[in-house]
Length: 223
Image (cartoon, rainbow, N blue to C red; front, top):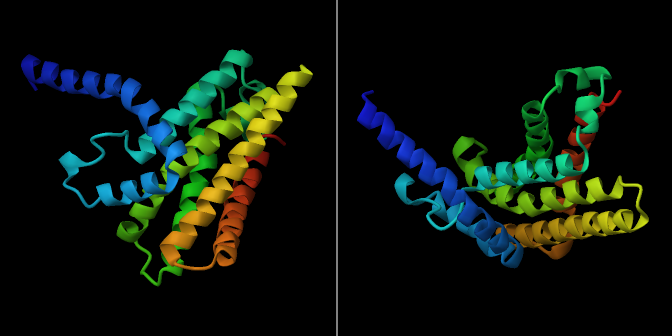
């Protein structure tokens, strides 16, 4: 690669990174305002040519990653050092910097899109493979973004010693959970054309599976 080619590649990288400052807030706002439409948009975009996909938003996995980066930045603004990084118990010894901590967050919150997308594909009588899973997984990456932000910010505030911060944190946590459960129930209802009761059961079971995985995985770093 010559110098001119290197500059051209750097130009594209710089534009892509800086454009996130515009399109990331736009994407989050679209998810919060119109969650089901944005999730449907995620699946529809995968049917477009690769160079035409997600022209008006950040793509779903990157949206989830950026949300977790934002959550971690907020957490670090409150705690100079995250308790997991400061801990030396169990596997927490392996989490010795912010990059490793971000990877841990990705695994924990990434379990939710995977669990719900897998359940949707299996209940759709479609063969589960990489192609059939990708669309629902991308849709779920959009859905989990505000949920993960609310959970992270709520947990950070609830851990403070100030009573008002604790109440606000608990409220944010509860709203994030309620929003996520409602959106997922409506998503299953729309995608599988089932009753709200069955859709709620799909949401409960798959969220419970992901939550148990996240809990068990977290305990490895806490004990």
